[in-house]
Image 1: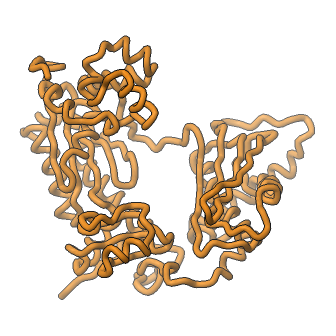
Image 2 (image 1 turned 180 degrees about the vertical axis):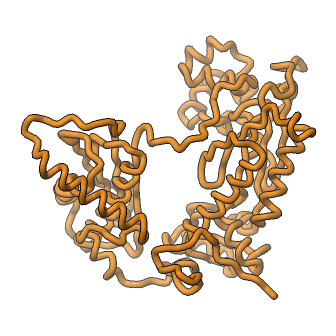
Length: 436
């Protein structure tokens, strides 16, 4: 390793990446103090682990493991149904705490965010490291959650730093220290390098992120194109990726899937699961004001094999009612009698911006306008009273699904409701267990 720095500045930009530690289970432990220090997992409703606490991870329990296997490893394991609504409330509160320090915050996922602190040293009369530490401390003090924080000149480096010392880690990286940090980072850890890219780079004799940045920029661009150049600059400490503070519409596809238990060979039930995914996917398309031209459906068998088809629409649309007849046709062609299915998936592709529709000469404008108004009315009702208050009749068989232990609902959806709440409409307040 060379002692020559890749850049001389400490923080030409000061970018923070904040990453929640085992976020779902940490929220559960924050709400119920009796769970702290115990091995906890979420995902009871799916039959596989969605998130494992660090106490569970220490026992070898990991995300994606079947609950049966996890329980065999740790009979005392606490298994909870996922409460995504409450996780979302904690997420919004976490991001709002970040915005007290800087208005430039990018919500990257439910438990990850970037923040730009550049220039704020003068405002707070302290270092970037101190500002980032205060942000981390406020989140832990107010929410009872630990987060890992990376501070660096670029988004890519900040993300590497936050992952470097989990959980509850803090890793500042000045620009003139990048050359000492990157030799510790394997290629597969770099944001933007997938398995195929890593295999390609390894065939070029590279093993670490530092090996990559030592190659010329032109070499990186010739081998990996525009993305290769961007990552090369980000790892050098030259910020290329801006923080995106506005909600972003999906650029490629919208995918909605649902795993259900037990697996079913009931035609009406499997179709009802598919329709529920269709309603969710098209609702998201309308929310982001995009219209798909491609629609695909996939049915996953109990043996994890897949059956699927896709179709191109004659005209892009985000109206569920327009597409359901086509969904039914695709389903009938894919479904096999007597086969146990465990999941359904819908994918919407070729997304157009909703900036005015183009109609063909023979399109039924009256019918199209009627369906759009009906869909708008459904959205308004569901917005006010909760998702699926109004839904397709094809999804009614879901109500007849036999109950299982793993179908247990989170507490905030059943008994622990605040005054005025219903099973579908909740206040933005998480349930809390308070010992007096």
